[in-house]
Image (tube, rainbow over all chains, first blue to last red; front, side, top):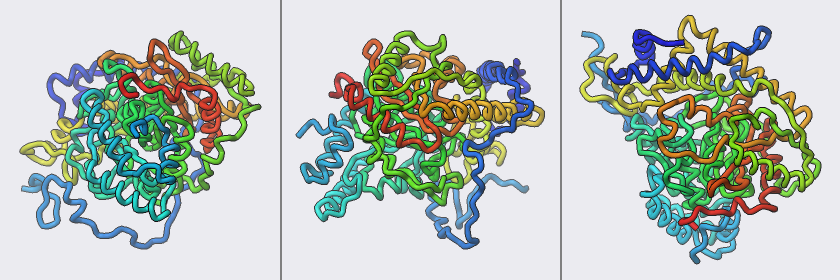
Length: 96
Length: 487
């Protein structure tokens, strides 16, 4: 199935990816080919088959006591941030 | 002594405990090999020299005091997907070029606890998305058997480093074959454990229902030793399995006679290179000679494993990589106009071409109107493949076949067509979809390039797989071959 340039633009917008003009035809071509390739799945009869989301069936989510286990390491974590001030992460102004 | 690098990790650990040489000597020798090969192979992203030398000194004191762990003083390297506290952790991406991890991955902490000394972080496909180690922001890794060829991927740096004997063991991860495929193309042993056997905490996520950490070594015995230290329950990983870790080393000598081996019919298909097939058939003869009982088994849905993977893995990737937004860590674009521009340009500029391709594929297959047709359908076919494996293990102990269709290919040969690249993983993806453990071991050469035999077992059968691999390595010497120029 061939994707249009508009569909690529819409996927990129959903994925919050800025694409350059030269990237559009590349992804238009390769995503179309990938979708064509995975369409082989249509051949499989799966009417009564339960979808498998996890490789170890029967494994349930564990619970733990509701106690604080994390230490306050904010400064440590914020050392990796592009821009911080007074312990806050800075981004461009959102509200005028 | 100058031939440490041709010793196995098991021999090095024993030599250190017997005080035949020191960890400092060993670490210096390996660091020298890393430096000497870096221009040719590009196997490392970071070399942690000072830390390694000071850790070696600590290890030597522990050895002198008789307080050594299983791996005390043994040099290792970590794939740069594992977080290492205070050390840059890039995942092969511009996005994380400046990221210094504030904590250790559980795997890193466990190996450190066992005494291993980290020499550096190995190069890899960006965010582990690739089968050739060409998509790294830090340039392609080269195959030590022939620098014009790829080492496989995504754990290509770890595989090239172990193959060239720059380090006796390196950690790696396997989402669709990223441990086994480079092990095969570089002529070493690569173990992908059962999903949940090794903690994923601090292992940068790509596709969380498929990702599993493991190890690359020269021999199966070395892999057993490292896995014993890496594996185990971790409360920080919600999919970690709480079952005891067997002593994989003690289990190595288990007799092979009577082992029921299933030959995967679907793996001996028209895509398998005829020379590769010959090496695999010869290896199977060796197993027969050791007393294995061979029979053919068919997993009819297995040929759909690559299409399933290229829906499920991109879907999970698009979700996992949503966290890279240029706000709290990682790459941020210059002069963002507004918040939306900051997100879009930081991601557009920070991610490479293949990562963006997978994020967009995943976004599409999860988007409204397409979820049922692609994602849900793929999960149903995944179940069929899983049931095929379960049925097969009702009649055989392990499955054997090739790890890859061909030996290593040329750098640049498959970069223009993603589908051709994806088909490299045709024999490895099944084990990821079903969460099964699998090992690749060297079983011969085609035109001076190594070929890998793959052994797949039921969940938590690592001891069985490693003992079967070890039995083969006791009667063959392919695992001792070192690339010319690195001997």
